[in-house]
Image (cartoon, rainbow, N blue to C red; front, side, top):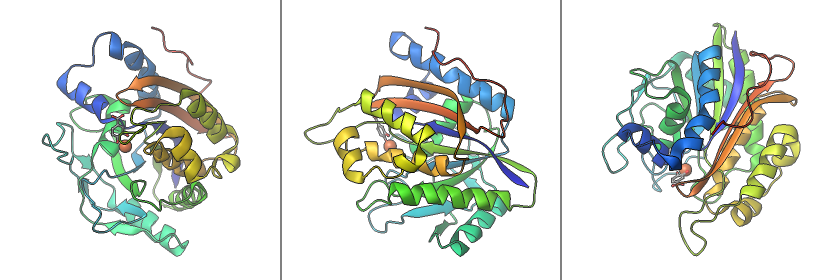
Length: 294
Ligand code: DHB
Ligand code: FE
């Protein structure tokens, strides 16, 4: 049977990928970040998920304003890194898992989530940066990847409630997959950032930290946070955080937050990382350090 072994929340800031690819993730600016993400690499090494189901958003790389799907799932056997203007990132191709992806697509659609099925797409920083955060720079990604894209770019985005319920339906789908498969689900994007307009550069650390507490401990309250509140408190791109609610919905009501790390600024964003496990069904023991040693 398929099993969700954990939930990872991580921002997907492109400069993280660029710094890793170019060997410039050194010096004072990156030191605390480098130390702060090590525990998630240790967790991945210990848990070794077979599949990473990555809930992310495409930033007009594979999709465009010509047609806007609210939820899409990639069922292809492979996904190439997208060219976002400087050539594709020099990171491995993602190997998919078509059998599981089609199973999830079928289960979700029969559960009345209208997924768009994507047979071919390149994946941009929204998906590849989280892989770089948790695996570093391997020759091949040590997991299969199922991309699940959410429209967070063009109003109207799905509600937090819809995202949370999608997570629940994803869990049901994974758990009804006949083959023994360990799945880690990722929520990516956020935390607060605004890349444009009068409030460009906005970061709201206090709001993000309270939101993280709510998302972890009171998801039924977190799913009710309105689009207007995200925009007002976390900037125009901070609304990416609704994707973390898909991840949260795929876990039990009670979770153990094994690890949390946040850092501001990374580029224009408040970087956030969390590792969640079901409290009644832990796959690792205890908690990891909560403060990076710098
Ligand atoms: C930044 C963050 C993002 O999530 C993104 O998609 C693009 C840029 C940033 O902080 O630079
Ligand atoms: Fe983004």
